[in-house]
Length: 234
Image 1 (cartoon, one colour):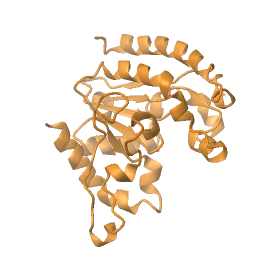
Image 2: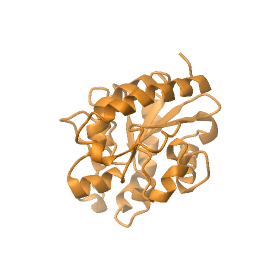
Image 3: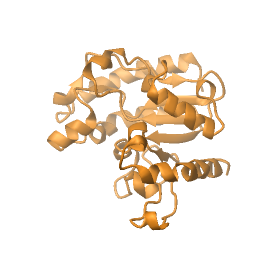
Image 4: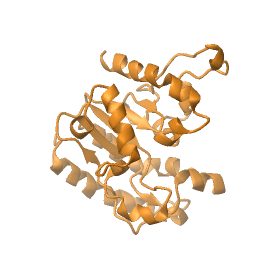
């Protein structure tokens, strides 16, 4: 099992044949941007204790996409890097040492997947799952003891099997009377519900947590982080 830079090179080599298979999926063709190279995953310098799964590299601003060379732009200090640094600190980890970050869907699209789905009704992430999930499962096998955290709501359509709940609020114990103190249990994606056969903790993305409608997630953040720590220690 290779977990150094050679492992990343092997992953990148395996990803380009997968990218070509995407072109064979008719519903995806109008939405693929094949002009940009696939970003490389982010690999910490020490023991990897947490794997972060993002959705895809298609940032909102089109002009910025050509500068995305590393998953989640973790090769430079932007707002998302700061967000994950804070999360790592709360989990007792170091972003630069203990984190491996990858995307479930590794290619760029012509527009962000949520925009495509809003305008066309097509979930390009779910449509890409058959190609990218085998790559992701192989990737995760390099870190059999690491905790796995997914980032954001949309990627759950790739990571959760049909028939299981794919909403962030379900895993974070949302109750319609939460302002009155009512809560549902905190949950993770079980091995049986996971398309990669691993336990996954869905975590809110940075824009969700800072949004005006996200008070519930801001309030529940500390509890969910403690939940991750307790479950990971078992």
